[in-house]
Image (cartoon, rainbow, N blue to C red; front, side, top):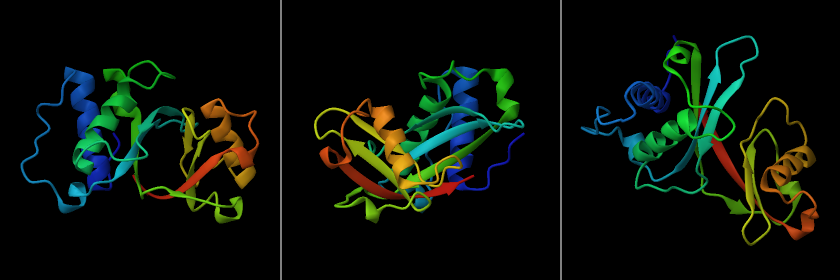
Length: 179
């Protein structure tokens, strides 16, 4: 079974196991929250299968914090990644032995003026039509090697692929990935 290497992934794994088995997380206690989990930051929780393909099994996150601390943010996103990612059926008890988890903790997004301010290895991006449609992509993904590809993927995800880049609001953020 996967062994978490951080307090972030340890919490996410405990939540995923508890929620998958019992459909609640009441046993995840908030006695003494580690100071790193008290921060008011957004995060993504990603679940991968530990197989040859390292296939994605769920990924949900927030680009702005929705809760007062990272403790609650991770709990919410871990539940959603394991049971509410529309691309996958909810995680089953049988799959728990074969998953691995990462938690990406994000900085506050900053609007950019030029795509020269982007770097696919360093920055994740948020692309918006300025009204209702918005897409996000984490940084440093294996299959994304150019800024143009990064922007096109996010435009596709947001359903705004027909818009020119100069018609978009583009934001960048840093992300620290924990396994």
